[in-house]
Image (cartoon, rainbow, N blue to C red; front, side, top):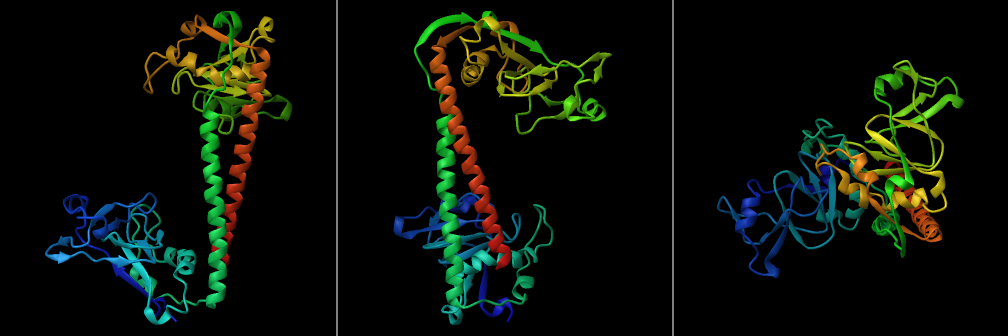
Length: 374
């Protein structure tokens, strides 16, 4: 059969704008109708209107869930499942429902999970200006398994979705938890200049220079960081023997902290191990030998921005970190053993956060495989 034999695809309301929504609030909760549009699929609803709202002397079209919203233009072909209640849409989207005579043969939740491939075939272009062709979609050949098999497929998706929701919840909780700095009793105050050594990066260490000075062996390989990178997105690698203005580039040994000089001025990045280099958009911070048992560098990376934040010339993207101002800052020092305990707890949180993100990636892959199979 073709899709039009079993599905109805209904257009939305032309002229259902934010202004119409604003001027037609529901008179009470029983009269409220949720409004969706092609641009709110990824977020939430556009708003709510009264069920008797008029547009061009006609009552708005109201749809009853369960149903599928499919975007006509913009995010063309993207779908959203509406599980219950009444809703309406503007003319940037269509509402898909099962025809009554197929209600006992087709599970609409199954349709929403398997329809994406069909929808993708009916989009004029893959950019933001794409348009979903309703007529082309309705004429596609379509088969469906037994209701029992559809239900089983839906249950698989439900389990994956629940696991993803739980995983995302804990990922967000861990992100918030990791943003807190575990504190301790201050045992002394020391000037940053007494504790730390700070060095500038390499002027002229550009992407072109890196490209033209690639290492010929693992032994001469060093990672390049800048003020706009982090451990997972560095600038690449360069040969530690590369000559910059007739001099070998400056290389640094971890552990160390990179402090952005401009761009994300004052932002700190802890480098745990290895040899690295950086350009002149950043400084490299190390603990002086005399204070190795007083200040744990990784611990300081967690608290550093409370000191570096006030050493930036302005708070916009043009701000510059002032090295001299920072080196005159008084640093609150807590017990060294307490610092190490904080580092361990932070690492444990980071490891769990990483495992949860990896698990979410596995769930995404499982869901994608289901889409390909069905």
